[in-house]
Image 1 (tube, rainbow over the protein chains, first blue to last red):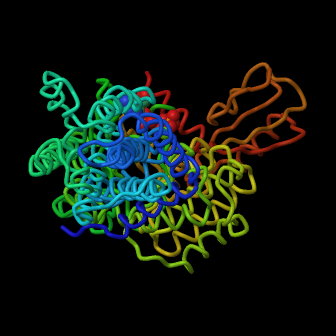
Image 2 (tube, rainbow over the protein chains, first blue to last red; image 1 turned 30 degrees about the vertical axis):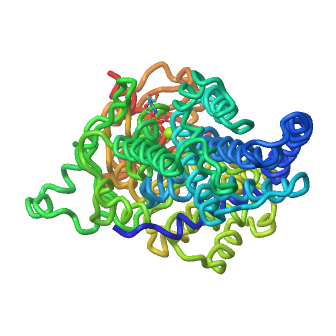
Image 3 (tube, rainbow over the protein chains, first blue to last red; image 1 turned 180 degrees about the vertical axis):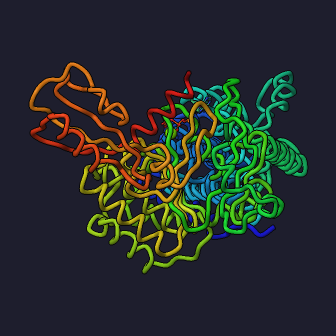
Length: 255
Length: 326
Ligand SMILES: Nc1ncnc2c1ncn2[C@@H]1O[C@H](COP(=O)(O)OP(=O)(O)OP(=O)(O)O)[C@@H](O)[C@H]1O
Ligand SMILES: [Mg+2]
């Protein structure tokens, strides 16, 4: 089987052009809201909690804030990217084109992940304005960034296929992703929680993401980095299984 | 069925007709709702022809086209395009098909140029700006190439859809009601464009509710009703077979009935007895008009004017659908 690389290129380019057209919402909004987090949490709380495990509080929250944005951006970019053509009807052209689900997934998920990685990096740069930080393992940092972006873009893509109205499109990010990220240790180390909550928190997959990502910055981790990697790969594989099932059954794609 | 006369030799049945570019065999489609939109369709589209698919609203025209193009999953039966199965070999079949769908759905915020170039890439073709330029010029969209689609009129949007379908140089073009909501001049332009495409060897399948369009353009006509294909025929043969011609005489004086001396003619009275209508077969050796006029003179019946009219495809179509209902 030869893949239709021209098609992948076309869809990817098209999606990136859409991002450029909406530069204000897609880039400026997350940057502004993250800056606000820095001001509110970094300055206000940071003046009480001076450091967490030897890292200044302002620097401590950077990986968590980036993850927060990365997750929400990946899910919303990818889900909207595939939902919109379904909604306006332009999906007909994708269906009538010589492309399989593989090209569709690679191009839409690739574009969504690219965009959220760009936003993540911009936030990383913006953080410099507020606090100084070091990155202990830059390659691992990039690896976590990419893996998370791809995995959650895949997840968003699945939501976009499943959703048949705008409400469904919003409900999972709003009711699941955002709470899990806030409770996933973006703003605190889980060691700061009472011991019962420490156990409960471990059921939250986002904890592993943030912990691993923070480790790549400061060498500090709430859970072992190996476990973080296994968790991300596990979720990636789950998403891939779901996508291949959608592909095989044509679920919600064609009548 | 109607086309039995065309394929009654055993050889043509045993080996698939080599000139069929689209070959539909026993195709049925039942939607998830349980509604059966297509019932066992057999249809061969010949390479290079213009085929018009006619039928009332909801007959199944769009369903049929969408299955061949890959937008709707086929039910029972099989479809082959240029010898490739549309499911197993979908890359091969879709690459050579262009589709202009019935609904106007475009990426409102894209420019004309970008959206047409996008389509070409999507169909796996390397960029070829010269071709896109030619297509846009042919469709009078060149001046609008940098405009966003949302700034275009409905007719222009329809042309953008056609440009997208032609962007990858397809061998088979499906036009699902291409001229709905299009003004007379533009419709003429489209017809000319379709003819030019045909000259280049492109096979064209179109659906339309304007029967004069089929009459003007098509080589062959298929009529579909309630999911079943009820006629497939050469357009001229269909019009010959089912078309009748009438001579209408405006009489000087009202007639109460047809005189016995004219009983051998197929005559009827119209317009309260002031019109005499003579129906004849255009294919017959003699139309009988000369004899009729002579006999009218002999019977002392005078007329002040005369005209003829031929059954249009439209009337034939309406007749066909009506007889299906009965
Ligand atoms: N997705 C669907 N689910 C269920 N029924 C459908 C679906 N799409 C079409 N139908 C039904 O199938 C039948 C055929 O529809 P189709 O669109 O093929 O008709 P058509 O001949 O193109 O009509 P028109 O001239 O109005 O465009 C209709 O009764 C329609 O309601
Ligand atoms: Mg239709």
